Amino acid sequence: MQSNGTRIAALLAALAVIVVLFFAFRGGGDDGGSTTATPEVTTTATGANERLSEPAPAPADTIPVIEIAGGEPKGGVTTLEVDKGAEVRFAVRSNVVDEVHVHGYDIEQEIGPGKRTLFDFPADLDGVFEVELHHSGAQIAELTVNP
Image (cartoon, rainbow, N blue to C red; front, side):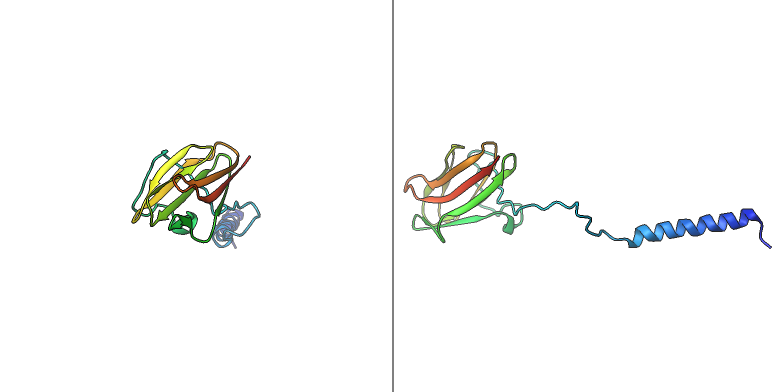
């Protein structure tokens, strides 16, 4: 016959194993507290005149790329929407030389054939802003920064 001390030790060991197994197999179920990130057509301009010819470090599907052909945006004006305080990130690829101007933020960058120009800046002003080709005046995007 076992002593009470031995029974208690065996019970505590079994309880410890149950607790460990519970946490090990419980998984990461959805508790409703998860956050979702809007494919942040979050555009951010780190520097007012930052130009990259290499792909951006973030996954391609999170950075919208506006294609310019003959001085006009392919597929029409792109809609970009972010919350104030987020980052605004988009890239422009063009077959013509021009400058892209983000109104309200007064950011301008040159674009041209064979280059992908990245715009990356904090959305610190709320409102609706036009993004246009400086020389031709063609609107290529509409940036909405929600308060």
